[in-house]
Structure formats: C-alpha cells, structure tokens
Length: 332
Image (cartoon, rainbow, N blue to C red):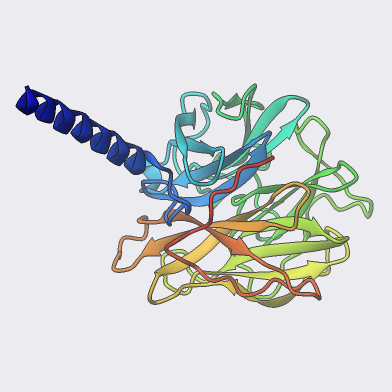
C-alpha cells in the first residue's frame, strides 16, 4: 500500500513539475529580440491600427521573385502573426517584378497600400512606378485601386520608388518618394486617385537634402517636420539613416546627422526604416532592416526594432542597434 501511494505521489509530482516547466517555457519573453520577424525582409513600414502594431515589409529576394507582400501584426511588439500575401501580382496586373517598400494609410474605413513596382529606368518604354491597392482590413487582401500607376513618370530625376504617405495635422495627405538620389513631395487628392498642384503651382516639388539616396520618411513633432532618409549603397555596410528638420513639409531641409548605422559587433547595412510613436506618449520606436554579420548576399536582410530618443532641443539622439530589441509594449 505504501509503495502504491509513493508511486502515486511521484506521478503527481512529476506531472506538476512538467506542467510548471511547460508554463515557464510558454511564458512570453520580455524583449522582442532582433530580428523581430523570421525571414528575409526589408524596407519595413510600421503602423498602429487600433490596439495592434503592423509591419509591411518588402520581400527581400531577386527582383523577378518580388511579386508579393506579406504583413505582420502584434499586440505587444513581441508576439507577431504573419499574414501571407496581403498583396500579390494577381491583384495588380501591370506589376511584373520588384514589388517594393509598402506605405500604408487608413482613410475613411479603408486601408490603402502604396507600393513601388517594376524598377523602371525609362518611363517612355516601361510601365511601372508607384501604385495603390485598397482593402477593407489592414490584413487585406489588397486589390489594385487605379489599374495603373499613381506616379509612373521620372520627375526631377527621382525614380518613382520608396514612397511614404504623410498625414499632416490639418488632415492633408502628401506622398514623399524617390530613388536615384532625388526626393519629391506631392499633394495627394482626397480620394488618393492622383496628385494636385501645390500652392505655388508645382505638382512635384524637390525637397532633396544633402546625402539623400532613397527611403524617405516624414513625421511631425512639436510643430517641426522631420525628414529622414537612407544614404549609402543598399547592399553595402555603409547603408545608414540621416535626418533633417524643417518648418514646413517642403523644408528647406538641411542635413543634421546620421542617427542609425551599422555596428560591427551586431549587424551591418542598417537602413530604410519607419518610425512609430505610442499614441499619447513620447515613446518612439524605429523599425528598420539590417544584414546579419557574415552575410554577403545583398538580399539577406532582416527586420529589427529599437528605441528612438530625442534630446531637449528636439534632435534625434544616435540610435543603438541591439540584439535584444525592445520590451513588450501593449497599447492601452
């Protein structure tokens, strides 16, 4: 009888220990870690919709294989859910390759995904540039909105890629874009079907700062407009992010400094980023791509996140790239 009771006690104890271990193993980590999502991805667009964070990246592969986009959502910056093929070329017939750098805006209960496509070099012979897709939910599926590019011409020397959609505090939306070392800004129509002339009569205004290469981003803080962009070569270790501050969305923008770059002990090629601010707070995060140490394939890029801080004068402090990432953060 005692032997039977002893065996039963051991069995119960073993089960309790096993359950405890399982619970510990299932306990979420307090930090996101970097990279924050698995797979080769780049050019991340980060957004907050409701109580969830969203990341829309470029699928990092050969141009001919870049025919779809995935998205990722999270309630806390640590646990991420993959939403496969929120957009692919079956929904945008004029896109054949090089589906790049999504920018997403919510307006009137609809979600609009702006994308670059086809890597055009001659707009008289090639169809491509910046397009728009629309969906009823942030996870799509997104469908072609216009049936043609929104911006399909090379203006002011800017290849029509790397678009960013900025909503000013007066409700006006602007599109900021450009590769080949040139950056343009244009005013979007209310329904996102085109662009309209600015107050001075220009439609596409050049706001190119010194050192600009590609990947522009704009946000407004304390009445000032921050323009950020990527410099260097996207396949090289010198890829980095710099910024400027202006009094209007049109600048003028004078380059201030580099704020994100490689750390030879962590990763190389840190660039093409986005920024999010926790609503109602001064908590800022930068989401970017970088290349793991030892990787020589240009397309082997991963998406990472770190904190971004400002000093008392409003300047962005140098950003430390980490392997730990950021702490779990739910939106209240």
